[in-house]
Length: 331
Ligand code: SAH
Image 1: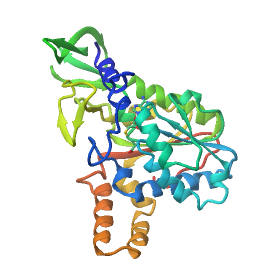
Image 2: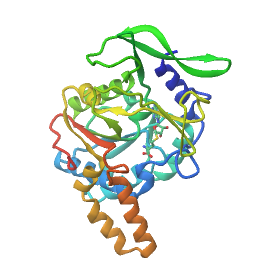
Image 3: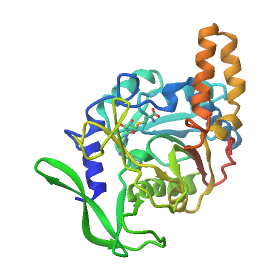
């Protein structure tokens, strides 16, 4: 089967899919994300979102949407910050796009009092001015891979031999305007493009903003970015499908190309984005009420989010805005 179908099945199979069967986050899980590292991350995203809402004229009601909310940590921190915008909470209708029953339970707990509606897909979120955030969501959507063989780009698939999965080349070919030697791999993601396109259509029609934060690059580029993580260690994406988190780096150029009829901002590095939104000011505020150990932890967490050697440049932020929506801060 094509790599994308394999990835889709490994992550989303109704019975055995990785995201269907567990909470993968945190020290006892498989990986840790920015909102789980520091509350400052979600608070700054909240300030960004609330600021756009205020400058758009405080439309009411409006949809606040998160795609792939994990444990609900980002949204809880976002809402704590956005409460400072008068009327924001009253005008907001909270919608969570989440396929995992285990994570929906955690989100319900973290967001108790905000009455979220859950969706399997973005399409069922009602029309209207929409502010959407998605952190480490696009990387979980399936990618197609093509491998260069004898001057042609051939679709890459996964086969099973004696109970073991391994990559294989399929007969289908595709053409890309990129030159590379034999063995090179190129990735596309129809799933990412489809998701972004439907968000962009909504924004261009009804107004609003979508903010995507993820690890990725600005294509076109060659490279095999398919990776799997289990218990905080890299493993082969082909071993034990359904037991490890499989992701691919996000091509932000492809995201921009899918975002038709909207204005795009970025991508900028996560470090620059958080700094521009006032990370140092917020960290200092938190440190004022902290003891020495906590101060060290706050500083360490902020460094992890922004340092170029950590998450500061590999992770990127990209925003798109629709009709009559002002430019977001942070870019
Ligand atoms: N945003 C969170 C979690 C990132 S993990 C954080 O930053 O901590 C990826 C999230 O996307 C999980 O909540 C997972 O269940 C969800 N997810 C993965 N594939 C999805 C899909 N196709 N549709 C909706 N949610 C999905």
